[in-house]
Image (cartoon, rainbow, N blue to C red):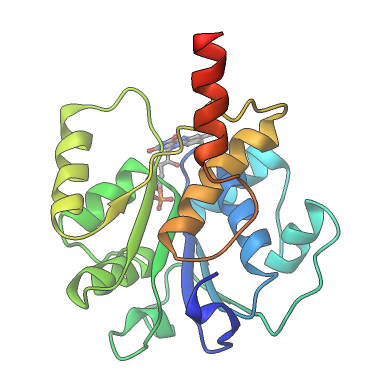
Length: 217
Ligand SMILES: Cc1cc2nc3c(=O)[nH]c(=O)nc-3n(C[C@H](O)[C@H](O)[C@H](O)COP(=O)(O)O)c2cc1C
């Protein structure tokens, strides 16, 4: 649990782009909404289209979150959705203080735009601000295979301070369902945002001992 856990002034910016894997972004929001956090959400136009295609969700964000199951009891969380093409929204300015931004999933178009310093929409602009203000910027890029251009852009962003968290789940926690795989990735993103969670057990001494016992047995 981080010191900020009970601080209702904690603010995060969460964006969802038009890469495959909208469920990662929605699942991330469903976890964050349980906490006393002010959430600023931006969904790109393509993000909405891919979400509708992959999950059948559309419409208002609270309804979308409702669709994945009963919403957990909200503890002073605030959900503020900004139009993806508005530069008048609060995350478009460096004077708007927040604790970090995550783009989940992040398309190669948005990776390219941020790497090039373009601020063509609110997601690019908000990410650009994170880099210039030295605030956490977590990117979950989804594409396969990566081209040389994608890899160069990702390296450029990593060197500029972004944390790259590809949605590539591990299998060492013995997942039983697709949601277990989704939660693996979401857990790693929450870790980077310094948000406490129970989605994934920490790999600890017990697991290491079990592993070495089974090897030696
Ligand atoms: C069904 C579907 C899946 C897509 N998956 C990806 C993907 O995994 N990665 C990616 O970079 N683009 C993907 N795209 C293309 C992006 O949606 C497109 O490049 C878009 O311009 C991204 O815009 P945005 O970054 O503003 O959301 C996909 C498009 C569709 C229709």
